Length: 252
Image 1 (cartoon, rainbow, N blue to C red):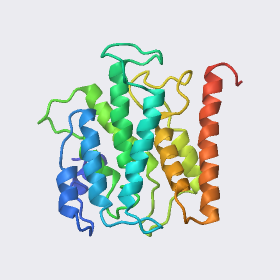
Image 2 (cartoon, one colour):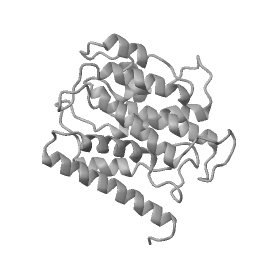
Image 3 (tube, one colour):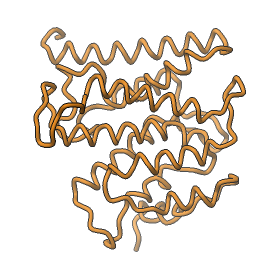
């Protein structure tokens, strides 16, 4: 008898929402990924498919916002987890192996592309994305590679603010921001890829900060939204700074 998890995977094997790009979405989610380096390509394709035709509050194509979030995330990765000048197998001054950094870049760029796909696409669920990384034995995938792939899906699920069947959010915005900020190194990124003594931002917080900064920088938003974004940015910065200090022995 199939488990509940297996039942959910089967139920969500195909996207059945009323989206003009439903066929393209199904083509993407039916792909079985075998290595995290593949994810950014499919994440971009999925984002471009689900956000096609969507506009922001200023009437601009929503995908432009997503592209800026990807670019901002890449900037933070290049600053805190640089790849340039490093060789495979080399331990960097940040205490992270080059190969782990490559994986972390691929993971977070994938999350940046998909940071709104679940929240903004009725009928698209966590299980549709999980379908891309579940394997039935037809492909040889190492335990570590599958863990990397599942971690991307977990992060996408965490950064997308969930809604109920009536379109209402399950949690307050403040609680959501703290949940993202608490998404810790023990489940984010390859082993030892996050070193709070040298990096300033938890990996998933990078993507959310990129999202918030772009939202905050766009004109035409109400004062109340500006203030909410500012509070969220301050909260994430404070949470990350407290952890850096804690790991340096400055906080008891």
